[in-house]
Amino acid sequence: MKNILLLLVLISLHTNLKAQWNWQALPGAPVSWRCDDIYFLNPDKGWATNPYYNYLFPNQFGRVLTTEDGGLTWDVLFDSSQTFIRCVGFTDTLNGWFGNIADPFFTTDTNFLYHTTDGGSTWNPVTNVTGDLPVGICGISVVTDSVIYAYGRFMGPAAIMKTIDKGQTWTSQSLSALASGLIDGYFFNADTGFITGCYGPSSKALILSTYDGGTSWQVRHQSQKSNELVWKISFPSRNIGYATMEAINGSPDTTYFLKTTDGGLTWQEHVFKTDGFYDLQGIGFINDSTGWMGGDYSTPENYKTTDGGNTWTVDNTFGIQTPPYNIYGGYSTNRFRKFGDTLMYACGNTIYKLQIATGISDMDSPPGSISIYPNPTANSFTIKINTPKEIGVVEILNVVGEIVYSENLFGKNVYLIDANLAKGIYFVRVTDDERIAVRKLIVE
Image (tube, rainbow, N blue to C red; front, side, top):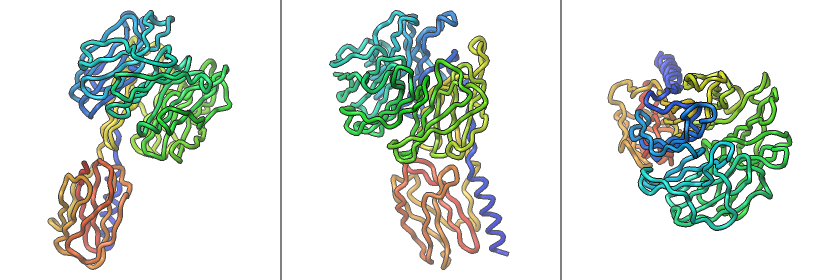
């Protein structure tokens, strides 16, 4: 009977450990046709950008906004009728940059990059650049407090900038020999990273990598289909990465995305949709298997996967269509930013926040059977079992119910656990033939 009861408890626990992802449109966030980019230093302090859409909507100019309270309220830092602001990044609360597409079709501002040293009260064009200057900037990657990359633009020419001294000086190089346009990037460290875009006169999707800080670049993926771009790239972990392939200058019935399982060395094209044109752009994964994709203004739905992209289902829990910005009948989802495996932001028609609820609290049967300390912990911790049994097991689960550590128990009172866990929230589960106990663990 004890084993049957234990089995029922384990089944219930496993069900409860399946996290629920709930997107919320932040009520105080800016609303526009599309917020092009967001960047957060921590879960509370962040920035967002609006591009320039005055040619569609009156007074829809380029803006930079900031929040101090996790997106509940926003203040405008920069508002320009001449600047098409595409991207933003900060190294601290004072020093930040935004990129301008600098396309004369949209605006008259030809400055490709702006810098602030006072938290956004004033902005000045970046001029201390040596090398082949970019025309416009589509993406910024803040790697450390000293190393920043900036690259663009999506319609060409292709160039990448880098600073290693907090923006005091910049070097720039043309990548026109490899790419016809650059859009997005992801860097694991100052030396290793990826940039996306297209190549060739017919615009074919492209991913490049560097392992020497941008001195040299290697081709990691070249699509053979014309009229495509790699728009956004997302790495939920070091080996698993995803990227969106946006179709341009046409309306194909099949849409693709890219996935890597070897840290970006190779990429495979996967079919996303086959039932008509979908203007695929934004992508974000909270972990290796669960993520979202969305498109530009013409796409009516956003999609979610929980199996690493094998299947996708409609998920409009974070989509809004706000008049008059929904004149094309669709949502806009462009950028996702995440913190660990419990918090993510997204931007589109407005700013959205993903909060993960596991539906589980501490569980202990019988009461007082175990304790863990220290909690929070920086790494290792101790489990004390008040009435040890001869055979049992301790397991550590992440917030989506995956077992990331397991160790057998052999009748001792005290166990030192050194699981080498990344920062985040976990659940420590101890079971034997008579009981189950669960404790929430925070790793800082």
